[in-house]
View 1 (cartoon, helix red, strand yellow):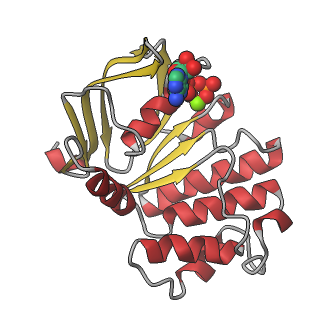
View 2: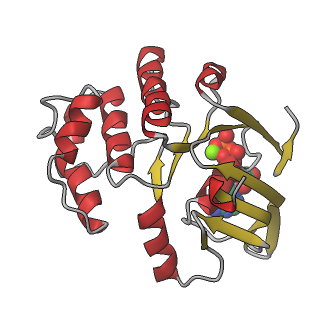
Length: 226
Ligand SMILES: Nc1ncnc2c1ncn2[C@@H]1O[C@H](COP(=O)(O)OP(=O)(O)OP(=O)(O)O)[C@@H](O)[C@H]1O
Ligand SMILES: [Mg+2]
């Protein structure tokens, strides 16, 4: 396997949170390797550090220390804040449990703005994604006038609009009923299989495992064998 088959490589990732004088270690030197096109689930008990890990991989937070963090061939350690933001915009798409759409602009503009921030012109891409995700005719609605499932599908459209190297999702079905959860999981599965989208997803939903290539279990800030 060539090194370019590894889209995400991390070694010795440590993270502690400081509250006042108290420093609490949360991640204890994690190593991970994700291959291009893989669909990986991260599961584990509440508080074990899953979101912390995803936020570090997604360049939203720096590790306390790490030996290596490489994203699509780029060394992500030692970047300035601006450099990290640039790399995040170029390589990472993020889907949150609570959607995090801008409430004051339309669903379509949520996606268009994300593209413009990344220097891309929306062209027909937004319409294509809305049609593909079962959102035809919903483009001009504000997020508040969409169902929860529709809002999450808009958020997924926003995350993949610029074809990120890695799509990260933190409990994307956590706020959805089972029918909407299934629809959203089907979309992730389709993005992975049809577009070759690399996906790392945190979930508590056992049913999601069917769509993924592998499941990684975490406990107390470490990976454990399944
Ligand atoms: N900003 C913060 N400051 C201090 N402690 C934090 C902070 N964020 C998270 N923690 C703590 O770090 C630990 C790991 O949190 P994290 O959110 O990564 O867990 P998680 O596995 O995603 O849990 P859940 O399944 O409930 O979302 C928890 O004990 C949490 O209380
Ligand atoms: Mg979490």
